[in-house]
Every structure is written in C-alpha cells, then in structure tokens.
Amino acid sequence: MLDSYKRNINYLRISVTDRCNLRCTYCMPEDGVKMLHHEDILSYEEITEIVKVAVANGITKVRITGGEPLVRKGITDLVSMISGIPGIADLAMTTNAILLSNYANELKKAGLNRINISLDSVNPEKFRSITRGGNINDVFNGIKAAKEAGLLPIKINCVISKSKEETDALEVADFCRNNKLEIRFIHQMSLKDGQFSVVEGGDGGHCASCNRLRLTADGKIKPCLFNDMEFNARELGAENAILMAIGKKPANGTVNCSGHFYNIGG
Ligand code: SAM
Ligand code: SF4
Image (cartoon, helix red, strand yellow):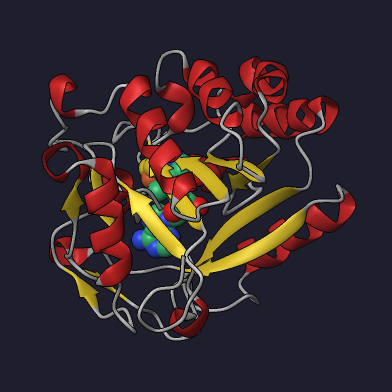
C-alpha cells in the first residue's frame, strides 16, 4: 500500500522477543535490562493474525528479528505459521547465529527463505569482548549449517564504528569473500540515554525509499525506527494500527527517545 509520500509499504520486520543470549556492548546494557512481562509479549497466534492483516494491506516481505529470535521457544512453529500465509514472497530472519546450528534445517523446512547473521569481528577474543561472552565458533558452525540447509543468500551484518577500513571490518569482509557470503556494513548508533537517531550514511538513511513497518514484541506497529510513534495492535486492532502507521509514516526519520533495538527489533 502507498503511504502519503507514495512509498510502497511492503516490508514488515517483526521482533519476537526482547531477550537475547548475548549482550553486545552497543546494543544492551550488561545487566539490569528491564524485560517485558510474559503476558505483554504477543503469542504466535497473535503475530500470525497481524501478519495476515498486514499481507491483506500490501505486505509481501517479512523479517523475524529480536532481541535474539532463536531464544524464543518454538520459533520454527512461528516460521511455519507465517510461511503458510498466502502472499508472503520473502521470509527472512536476522540472528546472532549462536544457536543457529541447532535450528538451520528445521527453519528451512518450516519455510524460512534466507538469513542475515550479525558478525562484527572474526577475532575470537574481540568477538567475545564485543558480545560480552559469545563464542565465535558457535557463529561459524551456524553459518556452515545455514549454508548446508540452503538458507541462501546468507548476508552478514557488520557494525562499524567509523569506517569500513577498520581492522575488524576488513577481516570480516575477507572472511565473507572466502566463504561466499554477502556483507552489509551498519554504522554504529549511539544508544546513550535511550536515544538513537539517523546516522549519516548509515542504516536508516534511505527515508525516501523506506518501505518498512515494524512490529514490536509487545504488539506496537511502528512506522519508523527513528521516531517514537507507535500504534498498539492489541488496543486498536491490527488493521487500524497498520493503516494508522502507514498513514502517519513520517517523510524522514529523526530521533527515537523511547526504545532500544532489542525491543523494537533492529
Ligand atoms: N540478535 C539478532 C542479531 O544480533 O542479529 C537480531 C537483533 S539485533 C538488535 C539486529 C541488528 O541490529 C544487528 O545486526 C545488530 O548488529 C544491530 N544493532 C544493534 N545495536 C546497534 C547499534 N547501536 N547501532 C547499529 N546497529 C545495531
Ligand atoms: Fe543481542 Fe543482537 Fe543486541 Fe547483540 S545486537 S545484544 S545479539 S539483540
């Protein structure tokens, strides 16, 4: 469906949880993260209903993200439920891949088309420090399993602080070349004081062609990551919330003062 700036809104990113098995320094505080209550988190049935309504209103591409989507119990059931909705042309997931080797086959069978994996360094010690404890071998095994399962193309999301010429970024780029993986660099945003905003040249700088809506783990439809506006699908009904979000999608992102990537879904 076209929004008021004639952008075709056809892409929905769904955060299925605000929980994560890592604590990346730029994403989550080390401890003391205030988590959503269990009853606030949408059930898989609720998410599927919202996606059906979204598809009836022009959504054709869906991405499952988080928090870490693979830590939510029964995630492959949700993938099956969504992939079974007629009209979904592309179903993808963004993951840190720590648990991916256990799930890659099941995910493919459930109807997931492809996967994005976050990897900011291929140096085991650096990776452990950025993620506050992650084991890079889990990621390597996850990538291997995703390839074998045919979750292709595999894209690597690599957060950079300043430039693509940083040592870590160059090494991740090499790793991708050698392993036939696509790479996307994402400029790190400062989440200080719970605020984040559009970074010049970074993710989110393409407002004129932005085709996205987001669904938070607790059921809010957000028209823009860099804006506090949200429409509660439980309170308004999915269709109203979606239509309001499309209708009020801003021309440009500015600043978000009330959320974090891990609960909105980066
Ligand atoms: N846990 C999954 C993962 O890490 O891939 C999915 C959710 S994570 C919030 C989605 C993406 O947001 C990751 O690629 C991550 O690198 C990115 N991200 C998190 N915090 C960020 C920040 N401050 N600036 C830029 N990207 C960020
Ligand atoms: Fe977890 Fe992804 Fe955030 Fe890292 S970037 S803490 S893996 S949600």
